[in-house]
Image (cartoon, rainbow, N blue to C red; front, side):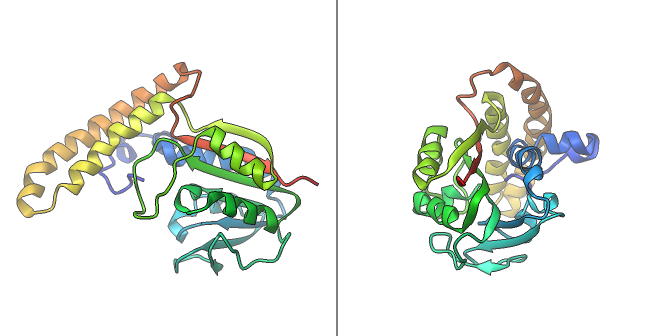
Length: 242
């Protein structure tokens, strides 16, 4: 995520449009909202690999559900501290599981998918998102980026039935995100007082050009990429068969 960079968009754009320009986060939250809400009323839900409270982007959609959160390390807003490879949860406990931007950080994603299959009730729904084109993060625990074919293979091998598998935008979402990463590179180089003084004007210019103007253009251009072979990642809704 690039939330630590300067953000001029939040001051000059409507809130909805500003959130729409956060291509990576918007793709995930919109997927949960559009595909997941219908399955949440009264459901018992697990957010697997939820991260800390400020990272639990699906929480805003779960007002009508009973929610458990799990991550491997002590963080705020967790129900369980546990390893997704061996979850401390009884078989067939949950109606719905969310696993968003997590499988790239586990050593054996096929084992994690099998564990999710185990803790889901029959007929239960899994909503999983993964990156395909993304920079290294949460080091050293970034092991994989997934294609749609690899994700389908892992989920079907675990026993899931794939209902929808969709890209997180196209080439121009990737291009806008990669260009915006320039701000992160510059900020990481600001390691001394002199560098901070010299590079701050460049950071401001890049934040305006790449974080705002270029992203607005890429948002419009992305409609022309129909093949979606170069995408930020994949969103998948699958089900444990009855």
